[in-house]
Image (cartoon, rainbow, N blue to C red; front, top):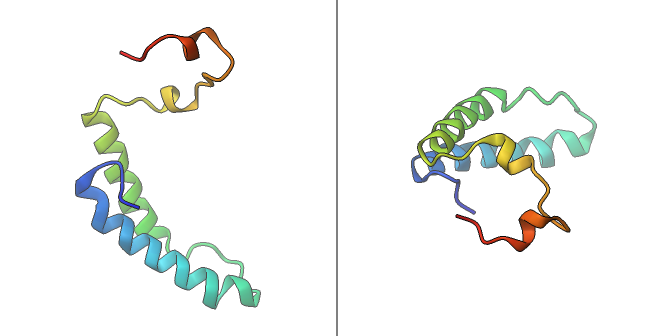
Length: 77
């Protein structure tokens, strides 16, 4: 799956690869320290935040529950 911002795809793929390696080769063998991919996560996170800002997406909008509310019934603008 690609990232929210096309410019972030490479950073996402690098982080995903690191995470999957850490998970399968370390976490599942009892090594639970989760800072192995932290540097890649931070790079990807910064890129996503920039992409969200460019697309005028606010984090609070993503956290809002629309199910079973009046907002669900209204078309999005």
